[in-house]
Image 1 (cartoon, rainbow, N blue to C red):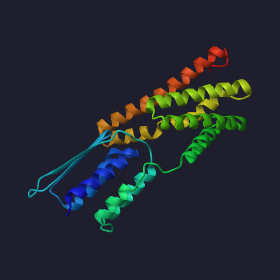
Image 2: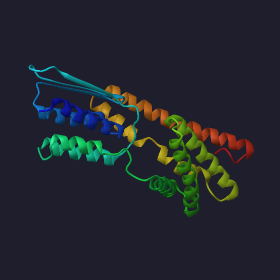
Image 3: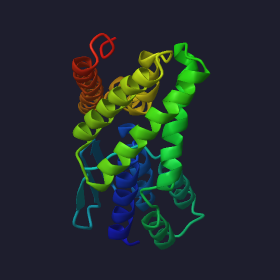
Image 4: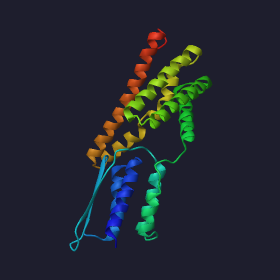
Length: 257
């Protein structure tokens, strides 16, 4: 058996899952299943938010240790599903090792086109308006602010702006555009529009994964995810607050909720 290829396959599977937002325990479990197909005496996997370390060894061979630094993380459930499907088929013997590795290499980081992603951001912004007590006019206004949010997010990705700054700028743009709409359409509730439009920025998945990792004993990854979620929430609050304060200077009485 090609132990190095098995190790490369496990590392690649773990990297794809970690970059796609999978929980730490799920990444470790998948990698352990792949490495255990070698029936090696020593199989060790350690996964954190920022990196992966794995060791594979037998008494009659030099241990193989691999590390992988993971710097970019997001949420892509489709990639996680594809990796799980490939690993299950390989571990069940339905997929050769070489083919499994090739299929993992073909898994791309993006699932949807840019225009489709932006459309989803706009529809999510509009869809949350009724949940906060808004009517049809707030839903229509949220489409406009959602469009502004999608535009800023797309520009930030193309300019490769860091996540914290991008979130801050996006929430700032949402607050400013909502208050400007309030000046054009006085009957619109700018608070509802702002709350609805920042929902795509809320770190719900990060908080959920942080709780799951912590409950399963992965305290380092859990604490790191909690800190990441806190920073995102702080960026949203800072961006919205700055936008409202700035617009309050130009529109006294209408810029602050």
